[in-house]
Length: 376
Image 1 (cartoon, rainbow, N blue to C red):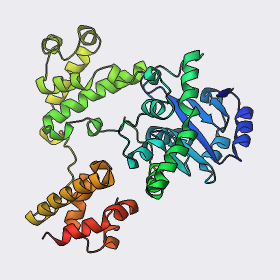
Image 2: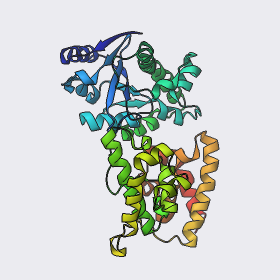
Image 3: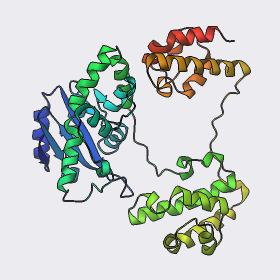
């Protein structure tokens, strides 16, 4: 596909004028989350019917013309796996995308197992894509020729892919289902990974006692401060496994850190004393100052509710085979638990449960009602 670099506000405005009459465009982003502390959009790829544009956001001051394209309900914006892109655009442009089409979500309604863009390009167009460029540093300039080719390739076939997937969705009567999910996806918002307390985003923190939680928080503070200082993503300072090992063993010397193999010798040289001090500080905290993990108080499940959950899960397995959709996407365990606890009397009542989709009621409403009618 022919492509053009966009490096000035004037050029971006001119491109967006060309895009205004388009019924559909492809959009993709490249970022540097694998290489720096505060991730940022490093390249915006846009594809029209016969041309692609690569927008360098480092050289653009006024994104309002592009924001208006994203907010135009008359233009379909095709993304693949749009969650990261939507959150990034919300963070940097404060924009809400109208008329989004997500090819990855579409594949879920079509029971396509291999949903990565590379797999789809191979399956639909026999195109091989080297996905190593997902992890390169897109903030570096100038971009290498092969990175440019990758960026264009990622967006060039999105419109064609939309057409093929839309045709399949229409044939099985699920286009409206997918569109409902696209609309919800377009409304997700960016959430910083650096909000305190840091342990709330650490996998497994909810199982730790209060003292261990204090040690964890102090170690995470060390990691995030070093990451910000060096402009690196936190995982490149210390891994979660390293931090968890120190939480479990609570070493009080750099030698003990090395003995437990919590850090490499190089890491221990750079961060060992800071980690030891953080652990000692956490261990010295008075009990009243210890953090606690926020618990969501779930209503106690009675035997009747547990029976409904079991019956609904069995119903889901049968429906999953019949509809050829993955069980967890069709209806997840949290929603099943909510339905079991609420025991709605009608499909209309079912829709009142927070998070329930219209398409889920259309797909499963009768089966859910029938299942609930047969259990206490």
